[in-house]
Length: 409
Image (cartoon, rainbow, N blue to C red; front, top):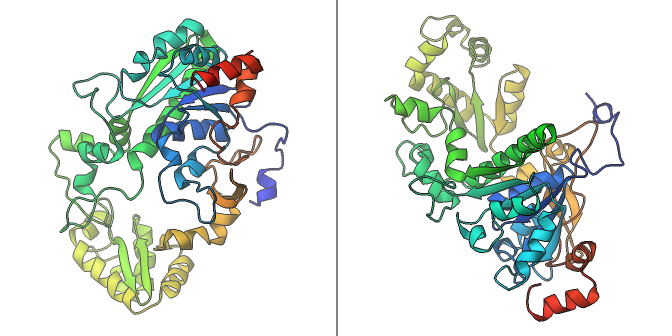
């Protein structure tokens, strides 16, 4: 399919399928802002509420090269397509402003430690008092209840507690965390998905609800069913780049780099045997089936490793592609960012930042043929929309001046 065929029926009068939905985001760092980012990318009007000093994501390095004042990669990535309102909820009068926002909102997102937003007077019960059908999404490390719910919760702690670290890394090495904010990412995605499900229920019944998403639960859900196997006493060894369900499958060293190559189907094995110039192994009972190859994992890995070692990455990839075998070069993120396929899929979109500089921001993963989504605007400067939002709520210039004088905004 060509790009123009996919978007043949696209509408260009909407920001996305969530046009008309308003979300108020009271979040920090990654998981909560990611939830808001997904909704904003899909076209929702997302108002990010921050302390007047700015949230953590604005201050975390590395900063985008050439930006002045410096723009954090986290802020640029997560807060695009949003509006920014400053509000100090520790100051008298701020609660009323926040709840005035909620009264006009469909969704509220927060990711503070359980109990924090209640102490500020803006938790679920307060929110439903001004908007009975509100969808209120709470994201935390351990959830809103349970023996550990009050503990501080961060991404690496969820990775450690879930069991993920025990399996990540080389078999002979130490436990290794994900190089990305994996638990945060998954919690943010599950929160956005749950918000959409709750909105569907609200539209059908008129009922709002409180949504509880934890980093730990999200990572456990995405653990390939391993918690079930572990609970039943099945051994789960650390396997590095190999797979429990297929062999050969591994990262193999070529003359000038690495490739990920593997076979999960017996038909793939028959093709690979020909590629390795060992056609006699295609139907051999010790090699022809997945169980047989798993029983001879070291041997089949050795065959592929020796074949790859004699070739360049391009030679291996070209040969494997010609045989319709699963293969990919092991790239750096810089190499991936320059890949014509990545660019053709709009996964890096040039976006103007708050200082006027331009940066390639990671685009939405999902493509929608009728209601296309994109990075429509860069992450806003702190408080860039405060006056406009408050004016829309009915706060005139004098009222806004008084809020500034007392430090509410």
